Length: 191
Image 1 (cartoon, helix red, strand yellow):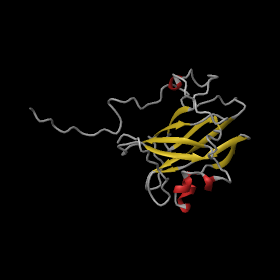
Image 2 (cartoon, rainbow, N blue to C red):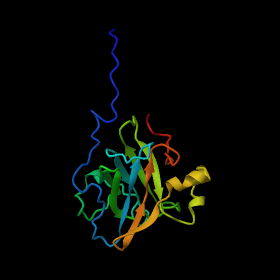
Image 3 (cartoon, rainbow, N blue to C red):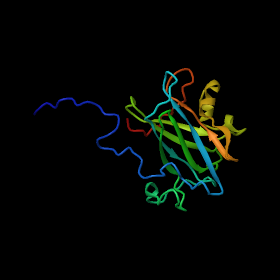
Image 4 (cartoon, rainbow, N blue to C red):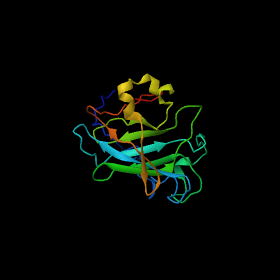
């Protein structure tokens, strides 16, 4: 039997299509949607510089706390689509900034509402998972947040910010360093 040679690792590809599927991928709802909110922030590296080539995936419940499960949720009709799928992708700009236009997620099973975020970036062999929790007095009772050291919980909390008179949330992601965001590992994550 022939011995196989080692091949170099690749952070993305060639087998997976990690890219923006269509223009408006970061718009889960249109700006004109009555419940539209902006989730935005910056992805920072360990030296505190913005990461210009990161890709973020956003998964979330709708405003009523329902998790969209319909077939084709990754192939929605575009930014103007009336069907909310709970999924979007955003690339960072030259300064590491990203933004999504979406709705504020509702509470699922009585938990504090959150955005689930996956981060793909240079130097990462596997995507990173985190959550961006909406500000709430119940954050200490959330089962996931309760397992995080109190001094580190702030790295999982959105900051309220208005944009053009509308609701907005800021969530910065620090890949390393003293302000490193808490990243989650799921038991069924195939690594």
